[in-house]
Amino acid sequence: MFVVSGSASRKLGDSLAKHLGATLAETEIRRFPDGECYVRITSDLADQEVALVQTTYPDNNIIELFALQEAVREARPKHLTTVIPYYGYARQDKIFKPGETIVARNLARHIEMLSDRVILVDIHAPTIPSHFTKPCKAVSSMGQIGEYLKAFSPDAILAPDKGALERAGAVSKALGCQFDSLEKTRIDGETVVMKPKSLDVRGKFVVIVDDIIATGGTIIKATEQLKAQGARQVWAACAHGLYTGGALPKLTKVVDRVISTDTLESETSVVTVAPAIVREIKG
Ligand code: R5P
Image (cartoon, rainbow, N blue to C red; front, side, top):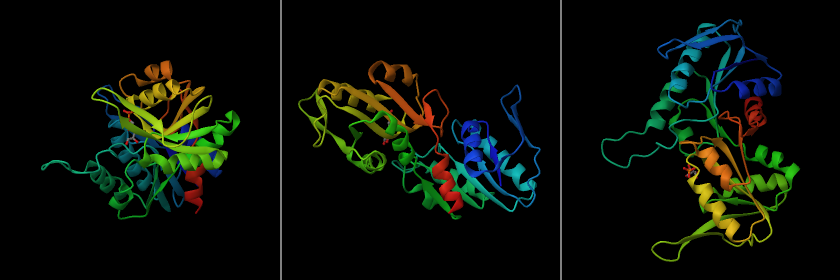
């Protein structure tokens, strides 16, 4: 089996090849001075199982993905699995106003065109796999995050809201610790209090778990409140560390530590999602 990694997912591509016992395909990927991409695959992929890994964020990585899919197809592989570690546009999954479009669905149509199957990771909108007509599975990195946190023994895992409780539960399962979700209560026109539904955080080491950290606003607000309620240590963990608008330095001023997976590569991506992807590939 061969793993082909796009330039947005090199770290995960290496990890995936190691966990699969596969060969990392040799590629030449670069940008022309105008920003357009050049891709070339020099390994012989004829009749091989191929897993192509590329995050579709930011936009220029989408075109690079399509070019790599085409290059893999031209090599006549036996089977092509496209792995999208971070599915850009997953938050554009609904029509709110007439004239809008579901970009997440549009992207799915293009991604599946040259793939035999697709694997997504911690997908923001659970409806997204249904936009694919070919086999598409979303895997979760939460168990892997839990495994990583074992070495630090947190007291509890918190979801930023009720909708994310399942994720917090999956992390806490690996750790055997408590989990809860935060609830917002409006005190007056200016004040909203965020508090765990039933957990007392006084003196505790807690980890807030989310799928995406974008501006960091959700985590910063939650951390400030948890510290005011007496939490001893607050960490934030996410699958996708997007960190838009210089979010990371703002976060690290308030949060004791921020960790993420390798779906988006940054200084916080200390957890690999490769084992979860391998389980899906091997069935
Ligand atoms: C929301 O539905 C997501 O799960 C995240 O909570 C959200 O994307 C985080 O955004 P931000 O970091 O900008 O608060």
